[in-house]
Every structure is written in structure tokens, then in C-alpha cells.
Image 1 (tube, rainbow, N blue to C red):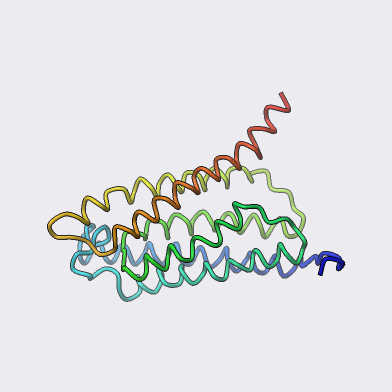
Image 2 (image 1 turned 30 degrees about the vertical axis):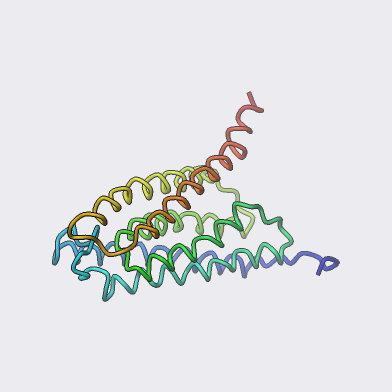
Length: 212
């Protein structure tokens, strides 16, 4: 394998990225639509706490589960990089390895509030995989750094939006989900924020300083 030349895989990579772009769009729209129906039928609190276990079922559960499964398909990103003999940095490996157990915990505990992560992450991935698809054909995209900015904002939203969970979980009525699952998510979200901020500083802010 070491002696073999790197594979180009231009069409394979482009197809893979287009699939994930469209899948992300479908998951974002599908989850948001089902959330609207749940709010209409059971109120907004049902998609935050779901004490009566009415929200995390049916089509909303389908979209949540599809999002979880998509994280396994995203591992093909790594396969493509390896076959191209591109270096795998810590951020890439850590990101792909940690999200699967995280969302498995969310699914197992029916933690409905993780829809925030599903919607925001899917939205960001629409543009991210669109960029990757263009890059597969050697096209330069001027808005690359804004994708990283969007990812950083995503983690801030994820952390802030799910912060009330423990207060609701330990309240008299309780909530679906688990405190350990929430804590796991907070640690992962905070680590992602730190790693992506470091990546942004090195990739963009460092270059800007050199130009000056």
C-alpha cells in the first residue's frame, strides 16, 4: 500500500460529497418539518423535555435515526483520504470517531432536545459537502473559511441550546434523556469548539498576519 501511487478518485469523491450534501438537506428539512408538527400537536416543551414521550417517535424518530446512521456513512470521508494518501489529522479522526457513540447515547435515551444538533449540523453540512464536491473537481471556493466559522457557531448554539437540560431533567416532572448523555455532549461540544477554533486560527488568522 505504501509503494502504490495515491488514487485520484475524483468522481467517487464528488459523488460521495453530493450524496451527503443532499442527504444533509433532506435531514435538515425533514427534522424541522416534523418538529413543527410536534410543536403544533403537543407544544414547544414537548421537543425540549418530552416528559410524556410523545415527541420522540414516528417520522421525527426516523429523521433522528437517519442522522445517526449518516455518521457511519461519513466514515467514507476517511477512506477516500487514505486512498488518496492524504494525511489524517487529529481533528478529523477524533471528530469522526466520537460522534457515533455520542448520538448512539442520544438515541438510546430518547433525548429529544438533540434535534438542535441534528438541524444545525445538517444545515452546516449542506454547504460543507457542497464545497467538498466542488473541490473534488479542483475548483477553488472563496468562502471556504466561512464554513469553519459556521461550524464554530454551530458548537456555540449546540452548547447554549442544550444547557437548560439538567435543570429540567432534575425537576419534579423529569425529562427524557440522561444527565450523563447530556454531560457527554457538553464535553464533546466544548472540545470541538476548542479544536475548530485552533484550526481556524492556524488556517486563516495566521495567514492574514503573514500577509500583513
